[in-house]
Structure formats: structure tokens, C-alpha cells
Image (tube, rainbow, N blue to C red; front, side, top):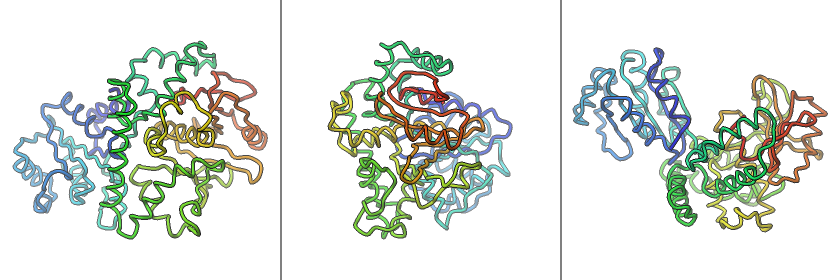
Length: 430
């Protein structure tokens, strides 16, 4: 399957400033497969070491001198490791702190070796005191589930991607037939999501029951990780929060509320658990802004935020949504459609490496997302349907006079009254 992040791997290989590459991302987003595929195409051989499945002796990394370490690795793995023709791939590197530290020494003393390291819970691991993270000594890349553009590619709809981009750039409506057809693909994506195995099986079978089985196994794996790689007193709290997210997204006010986790819940009790889920890539917190000024990060309110699941398909699985309810937009989902649509939009924006925020004016309006693009602060209002009134957006525009505003809904492309209308299937064009 086509993955946009894979295009950066050959660039990394050719770069004269190449450092060991560190890939981060939640489990099952395609890190391992993509790196191995890249290695097979671009190198004479790939030397692969998975710290989760291999019994690695402690003495292997007791001396981090690259020359000594390469000799040991070559002997342990029974493979030759050459300086320019071998890709050395450390998988689930967070399990071995010394292996992570070794990347610093490869960068400083043996940059001619080509090394990629990946970790599903790397963000969690490096937050521990025993880790010495090689700051400034690695190139970093975060891997996300397939976005909607990649989903269309997987379905063989490449020509529609080009048409969507043309309509986006020119603010011209999509042909109405294809507009409706693309919205149908969007509803399929809400169920399937972007986990590579789920997308692959959907392309092969179109079987939503099979996809749901795969999603449920991924959710079980996430729960297992919460037990294996978390402090004992935080396991229950972490699982409570993850199970509670779908309830929070069903509320009209999607601001995260601790009292909905349990009666009398407070930030001090649950903030470490939220941080664990965010560092693992399982959730994404989006913070409210106290004011609209650059740099936006200076004005985020650490006590007020929304929480979204990292993959919309997993959200559908957690909520046990029926395919017919999503595909045919049944009224039974009305209370959840708003939060679900926001979650989808958040996933798409984050995969485009936007820093996302949100904003509200007490008692007057709440805007779904604020991003910064090409130096301009842009407001985004999200609607799940095509009868999309944008009262909050109008209030924001009157108060802050943005360069332009964005409205994402089921409506066709357009630009009117300084508002750029983008269909739900075209967010990847931003």
C-alpha cells in the first residue's frame, strides 16, 4: 500500500547529513512493514533485531563503541553488517535503553552505518528516568494510520485524488455524482479507519465483520500494553480513561471532563494516565487556547482540552457501531456524529503534522480547531452534515479577522464571504 511517509526514507538514505532514524507511532500503524520493504528495495541486506521477540543478552550492549557493537551484533545475528550496503533495523527499541543510547554513538563516531530504529511505546519509554535519549543525534519521524488520501489510493481511486486537489485549489465544486460517491468512501473510512491490516483486508474482502475482528484484537493489544508497560497504580486509571473517551465524544460539549470518568474525578488523579495514552500514540489531546496570538503554544490552557482516539476505525470498534448506522447515516447516531466527525478531522490534521488547538468563548461559541498554515492562524469549524450553519465561525471571524476561515462539512467545495468550504473527504489537501 502507498504510504506517504515511506517517500521520506530514500531521501533520508541519500542525505549527507543523515543520522540514525527514529520512527515513532502506535502499534500496528505499519512501521515495521514499511521499513523492511524499504530495506529490501534499497540495500543489499537488512539486519533486523526485534527487542520484543528476541532474547538479547545484556552483554550485547555493555560497550557502546560502534566498532565493538557492530562486531557483537554481526556475531549474535549471524549476518554481515557493512557500512553502506546494510540497513540495520532495531525494532521495539524502547525495550532496550542501551540500544537507544547507542544511536548517539553511531551518529558521532560511525555515521556511515545506516540505522533505523522503531518503537510503539517509545514516547512512554523515554519519559522514564533510566532512559538517556540521544537528543540532537537522531532524525525523527512519526508514523500515523493511513489518512483518507492513502485510503483512496488503496482502493484504486488515484484519479479522484487528483480531481479533489484541483477542486480544492480552484474552489470549484466537485461533479455532484462524484461528490456523493466520495462521501460514501468517507463513510467507509469511518468504519475501516487507517490501520494498514484493516485497510488491506477491506480492499480484499469488503467484509466489515472481518475488519471489526482485527480492530478488536488491536484494542486488546492496547489494553495489554497498558498493563505491561505502565506503573501498577496507573493501569486501572489508564484503562478507565480509554474506555471513557467514546462517552465524552457523545456529549455536545466535547471538552474532557474528569467527572465523567468517575464521580468526584480530578485532574491530579488522572493526568498521568492521560499522558501515558498520549505518549503511546493511542490518543491525541487538543488544548483550548486562552487567546489567539502567536506563538499559539504559549497560550494553550493545560487544564482545558479535548481527547480524540488516534484512529477513527478503532473509535467505531470501541463504540461497537454497526456498519449500516454509519454507511446510511441513521438518526440513532445523532448524539455521536458530531464528536465522531471531529475525531476524524483531528486524525487527518495531525497526520499532516499540524499542531491543533481549539477555542471557545464562554457561553457564546466554540470553534473546533485552530491551526497555523503558511504563517496564518486559521479557524476551522466542523459539521457532520451538509446543512452546516457556522455561528461560532462567524463570531470568531468578527472578533479576530483571520486571513480566511475553513468550514469542513458534507457540502461541496466553495469560497464565499472569506470562508473556504472543504468536503469531509478533502482535508488531506490542506
